Length: 534
Image (cartoon, rainbow, N blue to C red; front, side):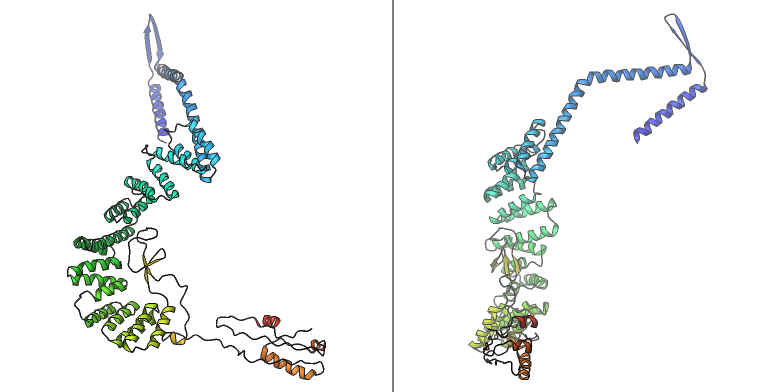
């Protein structure tokens, strides 16, 4: 657009110039070699413009002729490069599709047409072709050669990492991932593998630096980064709890500030503060975490914040927690345990039963069994409560990759994944077991039991001869009412021989409570109560 506008401006200027000369007539006289030439001013201007144009065209022709060898060679070079990139593109597509033979063929073709030092993708295509052909040693050599090229170094480390993972060499894989993470922490595969290595050997400071680098490169979101930092700081506080209490307190408090609802961080921070006799601040941390989500570890540490407290004082602290989170099973369980220690059996029983009504689980029945044994010593009721505990769903626990742990851990013992433990009920039972009426808590609708016919009584079926039409009709109606058998017509009995014997009916099975039954018509067709004709 700009070029077109400039061209129009130049043409407009030339037009104005020639128009100006045409309005002002005159002559131009040139004397050369004894001759005098006289022309008009317009003709002289046109001649000057024509000479300038002729000189420019001549100069362009001479320049094109001079540069023709380079132009011709450049044309063939560009054509050769285009063919090479076409072969490279076809080879990459073939490698992605798993066609190793075509990928190898296009690799050789691209290497002939393009210099490998000018196009690094040729090395990648060659390594991919080797992997498709099963030549893993050749692929590893190609990936190792990429480490010398700064542009291909990360690609080579990625290839060596995947090969180490394929061979099951975790140490080598983490070594290559660590080198890649040091150069480019934004790479997810390198950062995750390096993070697993650092947490496995307990290098919490190195893991925190890596998480900060991930956050700086915006590889992970802010909330995810804060969660990881809270987990790592909590693990660091637990590791330094005995050797360096001051550093453990600093790390735990920072973790609690990042995630106030994270129970392990709150417990670690409160425990560090309690060791330094700062009960008030530690209690506030536990209370805030309890309001967010009640947890038995928080309740245990909160009620035993002061070791010298009496059992009634611990009961009062448990009731304070219950006031913060009312109508919650964990609150009732906490008060029930404290009341049991204080020998307040009425309160303990009431709160344990309330916990069962809110969340029927194994721990509540076990606690109620302890209360029953301590108060009455009735072993029959204790065994009954223990049997209900066996059938009840399990209590929540720290679960990671199918492993149930009594204590929280920062990494999974199976996969080494960071922040793998979750507070939930173990998935060992498919569902809550069905109990009888007396096992269900108050307010739950009773289960309606299906009534089954008694099967102990057997009534012989009388043989009906063809002589008693009315009698057979009456007994036939009675049989239909009692056994729900499709009525048999008199014509059918007419064909029964006189010496035919009746067949005893099969014993009726009691129908299960959840048995939907059989369609009456289908049952009549398949019922063993029908007569056999011999």
